[in-house]
Image (tube, rainbow, N blue to C red; front, side, top):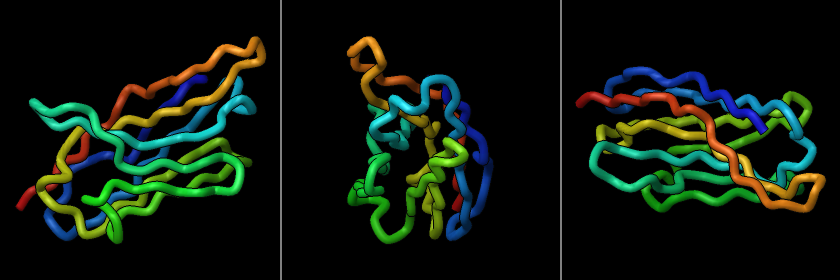
Length: 120
């Protein structure tokens, strides 16, 4: 599965951004997708995830109530609406897709990342 993120940029604290992740390839094999982020000097962390079937979502405590993950299966696209952004949200945001391929092998694919910078 190939993933392409878009929508990153620079905003002031309190602002909003919407990230998109477009999937292509064997998208039918995707079970779930997620947004991760990595700030300089820190480990990559899960921000939000969504299951393909049923749409169950999960959020990091630090973004609950501010971020919303959604998906459009018809467009093979996942979104992350980020509101009330804080400087500590500054990071490179990565899209991830996981599932089981037709040959039975599990996969976990990543996008190239998109920079989000929040200034105070």
